[in-house]
Length: 190
Ligand code: ITT
Image (tube, rainbow, N blue to C red; front, side):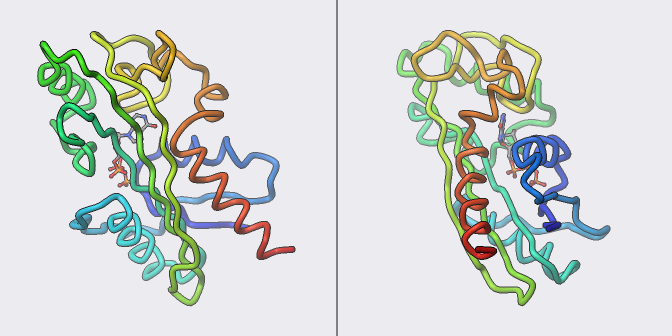
């Protein structure tokens, strides 16, 4: 079964395909012209906007992931603005570290909201995955993407970027949400 993954982020497609390897499900990039206006107020709303936009141009099963980093001491920022918090991934990390200077409560979480739209253009299933952790004092590690180098996994001194792909995929917000989507799809096929 092929499902259009409503994203322009190639890292997400790779991560998600790695997670479902061997399941008979393959995620593919949307056809050309995928340009959603992510103007929702929540991860859930933006995820739905992306999934429906991808459906409009593909008319098949689509899955969207809207995700981001939420930092408690910053009132949940960068949150839904994670992808645009500064111009480049390195500058986004710099900005977060700057805003966290002098703050001792460094609790944070990665959030992922997924929306599955069926070939009739209706929301078939939606869910959320969360990965708890905290913000490190400096970046460390080169794997993954985005804020991974400053995200310390709860109860450890290891950043998400220091984990192998396989290790990240066992605990990430994205894998938790995707696990629920796959379970739902398997139920449909049974
Ligand atoms: P699409 O909207 O096209 O899917 P995007 O990268 O803009 O691609 P989002 O709007 O969902 O995706 O923003 C997610 C941002 O949150 C992403 O660019 C990263 O900065 C951050 N993020 C999400 N998941 C992450 C992860 O697993 N590791 C590190 N950073 C992550």
